[in-house]
Length: 201
Image (cartoon, rainbow, N blue to C red; front, side, top):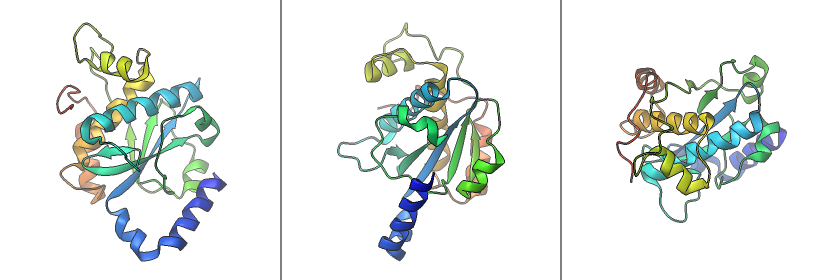
């Protein structure tokens, strides 16, 4: 965690007010996995999240981890001790993150939130479509994930994908993650499920 905090401090010092202006065009999402087998589940959740970001607004030579709602998104995989298993990230996550997606039933420990200085939107992973694992149709999520990563998607991968699709729906009309009340309202509305096959490239 100290490495992330030091990186943030150097970034703030080096870019100053110009960086603050640029921040309006990007946001950081933390993906926090609770429960068992966290390292593997975190890597799979990040893969699912990246797939959704690529499908919505992906383009060559990205310097962020992807785009959601037309806005650059950086991913902060947590807990940090589990993040070594994560691959495919190109961006620079900022602390505190703007959004925290919870993957698992347990809450994020208060000590973790305090260390991050997190005061943003908390996003439960939300309900998955009943047919999320079905691979019997061309272009299904399972087929798209298999094509991208060479493996069938797990529940964690589906949860990461689902969270990204919900964030895309909430962020696109706002052009960012503020006002937070509007963001939280749409995220609450999509917690029961969203259509994964709408809006893919």
